Image (cartoon, rainbow, N blue to C red):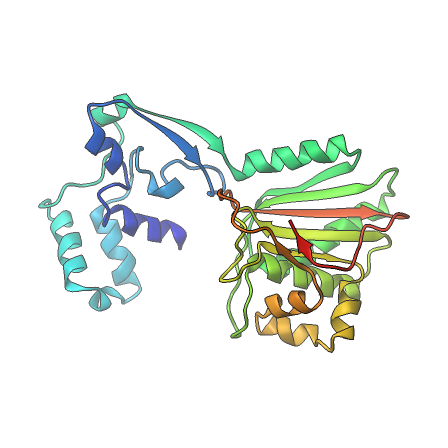
Length: 291
């Protein structure tokens, strides 16, 4: 898990797990924190260089022994962790340590802040907005199906103005194929496939993107699909279900011109999802989505 990875990182780094605050003491330290962690837990953001760490060397060792990976570690790593467990190497900084009397922080950016910003934009543009989740996680293609179901439920209530269904978080992809893509591209493709099987009774466009501008090992931030995307995919001879099963969303969205290309944004506050639904006005459009 990501928490297990962070535990290990804190015990192999001089800076993480409060290490930066320890090295700077007794100087004052004020951290400007940009969070890509859902819930903005400070000890998890960048593995907490200026905040206390609740984990131990023993916890870090257990990460490897529980998975039968200890013997695969370099000897230098084994020695360091064992020396830490025995007290020969200093533990990470703990709560109550005097060094934290001189440490402060300001959260300057996060996924939650970004979600609030797009909610405000939706209000400004006169959309009837609905927050689907600000803690979005789970398997990307399953989340796409759940989001579509949520949209269907909203439409049964009727709409007196355009809808904006918004979300933020970070999903995952269980790799079963050898294709190219990322969690946001996979979610966009899965949403388009699901919407073909169970169409929305309105025009729609759906964006799923990483705020850093990079989704998986690709040059795309994610995907932006619409009600005509599946038609473009079929016209290109693409068997969408096979590509999705091969985790190859990139090449599908590339051929249908539904990749979202932003370039590097210089920030990273996880992912955002925006579903716009509007009955009589065409939101969808064919063409490259370059920002």
